[in-house]
Image (cartoon, rainbow, N blue to C red; front, side, top):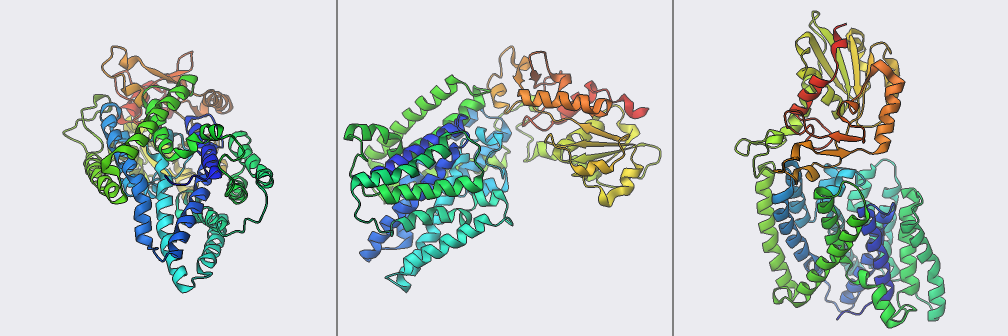
Length: 573
């Protein structure tokens, strides 16, 4: 059995508790637990590499394969289980996204996938993605491969100080890059060069002198570091990322330096230590399973955070973690790095092959009449194609016999343009669309427009709208149909299926009422026509189609439904 390091187990316990309760919706800053994992991982990495360098047995590729062998089997198996679960409960778009994530997770590149697609770790849609958390493994594996090669080369160049100099330079360069405003927050979050300093700080701690302090002195010395970590992770106080991330990284490093060689127990009795650090000792299994459990529970059963959701998450995650630990420790097929790699590779190939088929088939495995989907006639991006039709209307007005309607905004603006196109007045309108709200280069179109509509996916209006005459400007309200249609789709076949509704946040309802009062007749209310007195909004049209495929944008049938229920007769005045 590997020698346990009490401080590391305790740090990982703090980290995994923070991350779990952040993802379930209880902790505002719990996601900073990942920073703890990066620092601890860097320390353990340097511990192993230094030993191999001393023994002249270090080889970067072999080291990386050994690291990957320790966690790849669980990733590959989890992907297969999710594909099986998704078959029964997921809508096509969600199943297609899952297939993407299974492939990316097995290739340790989910961080790159999310940087390209979602680009926002805090977006509510990530709650419903079972493998969204494997971005961390992508960063870790990519950074490990990079560091392994660099440190190997540095050790060959100078056996005495090469590794330390390389680590100092990499830490400085990575941290400076993270601080520079020229890079986007998404890039800094998902790409390993900006995260490298967190790992290399852990590596550098290995080389710091420990001194000759007593255990009592070390325990007292580490208390400030623990207090900072506890405050950052669990206080709920809003802490800017530019302060929080360095604070958690530095505090984790300080605790490792001060407590890294304390006697087993870390000041606690042996029994108490084992109980307190249990989550930390099995943090990887908990990390993998917790988001899978949370995503599926939210997707199929829970609209909002409640005590039952939290309890089920803890219990199911614990059970799955215990099972995976037992299998990993006892299964003969997983004994030894080579066997684990072969097993993981086979499972990953199967998972990626199935995922590739699902991806190419747009995630469709059955007819979904409520989305107008026939499994014999599908192609990727079916819904996105409809939402994006207005891009083809980005042209000047040319028909003087028709009413000129200019629509501005993002995809929510395009939704409204499609409503206008589906309306009974469509033949009398010439619709033009401009992405965004900057009409500086399109003043002629604004002047020629009889009506200008702005629709955006936030409750903030661009200042550029002030340049448009108020008498012709109309604001299209925000809209939402819940967070995921999965909780609706899971009930298919039941008598009350098409009568289902979902609750909207009070903030959205209040903001809608405020804008309605502010803009009066020049406000297009997208919520009130579909909502009841209890603040619940319908998700199906009167002819039994989903209004939205993703709870944000409109299906064709959803646009047609709005075209029937909105009073657009003012366009002919």
